[in-house]
Image (cartoon, rainbow, N blue to C red):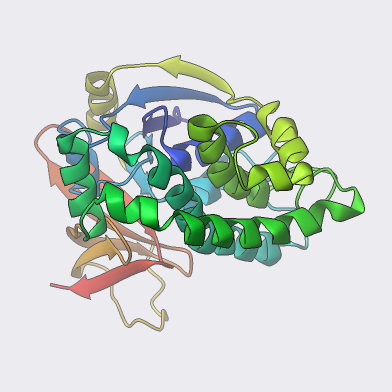
Length: 305
């Protein structure tokens, strides 16, 4: 299998979801450090404009959003598994619930207490990314609400662990654990291991130490230029379009794909792959040649051009 290349930066919480997953799988991977704000001149040739972090590259195939990144890692590296047999739908549903419901208030807990530390360039970038002003005063005022919401949601996970299980679904870690570790890790990194509301959640705190012990796999740093050269030397893997997909989309159509929440930058190309889980478009860039960019279906807006 071609090398897994992760384009990320150290304090990206969703990148940690992938990094801890690579640790769970004891996988070897290559790391490209990217800026935490735009511009990202060595990432855009690969993604065509998608700006969220992280992005995974395997040859000339580019995977956007951790939903799909984790599924692709599971497909290529099936053991140890992210998806316990017979519980695949359950673990993916819990993961989506965490990503969509817990992540935002947990980040709010952090940002309400550290927003003043960021410079104007970061504030401008995150305003454009989120579609609303990065206002430290507003964030500070929201702390009681986001802390209460985070506590309430984390308490559900605390209850899952109350029967003595080591991980969210049982004795072994799964995709759901990687997803939950993301917001817990982010609070711990910025505010400390016992920061509120984690100080009232002893099972989650103990669980986070078990997750941390998984590590981040076998990392090798490479440059962004090396990653671009790898893409240019490779060819995208074959893909197919489900002719019976309820969308009615057909192979070869020109479409755009973009997230439905933040970072709403459309990526345009030719439809070459379509299934219940993903949508894939072919595009060309002078620096990398032909690539295929893959997105999850859930949480993304598709438009014909």
